[in-house]
Amino acid sequence: MSSGVSGSGGSKRTHRIEKLARLYDDEILPIWAQRFGRLIVRGLEIPAKATILDASCGTGYPALEIARKMDEQSRMIAIDSSSALLDVARKKADEHPGRQRIFFRTEPVRPRLPFTADVFDIVYSNLGLDEFPNVTKALRDFARVAKPGGRVLATLPLAGSWQEFHDIYREVLVKQDKGTLIERLDRYVAALPDAAVAEGWLHSVGLDGAKVEVEAFTLLFRSAREFFFAPVVEYGPLPQWKAIAGHGQELQDVFWFIKEAIDAYFGGRAFEVTIHAGCLSGVKGPNVVDEPAPRGADPQDLESGEVELVVEDAPEASESFLEHEGPELDAFRDPDES
Image (cartoon, rainbow, N blue to C red; front, side, top):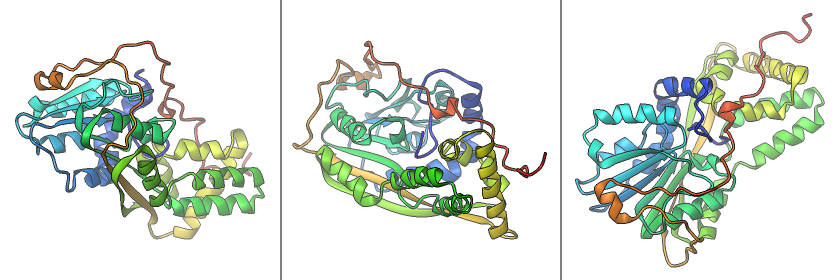
């Protein structure tokens, strides 16, 4: 996952994913996923007898929050590829007043959603777009399974997120004359979409009333060490940042200098990092062109809670970065030490 913190890209339960499931609700959800998910929940209009899909539901937020607002005839299907995260969601749902209206399924969201077209009144994904290799294809697939007039929503970090760290990273690379690494970092930062680019995705899919709501918030860290070992960083962008720096001793040295720079600049005060949360929203209109879809769930199945998921031969989803976090980061050792 490149844009945020969510479930794994594969169903295999590794030690790293099990650890994520244990700490997610305490250390990641309150400062990260809830900040984005509130953009989906806020002002969401749920029609009577609604059918709703949560793609990449993680540990159940905002699915359980939305379920509170659904009437007795409404149904929600919440899917995620990580059975470990879903175990947490199911446990929370056991004591939830809307537990009879929400159904959790261990299913991958790619290469495409396992549902037929025109099934759901609302399709949303909180920080799940990074699980797709192509964002516009993901949004097109969300629109495919939405009913005509149905709403599609998705959240992700936008350009400017983590900028304070990126600036320090680049300064270190410039001082170390790491030209190739500077180019990698610049490409990585340039790939983060701004609101205009994200809105363009919605228009390209053919969604009506396309809009992107943006809300900034800050994360505070007492030191560079706390920053690098914070789960929201460790399970978020850190693997990509490490990949930019290469491997071996070069990786270790670059991050040691970054650590030193953060502590030098922010010694005695918090390292404050800004995140720009974006919520993409649009309505399925006549301009949405559905790609050929497999046989899957039927709207009538949702009324009984029996949802038929597609079972077909498809390329196996590649494993997430959660299973390949890269080499251990020893950013706290002086590179001149023997």
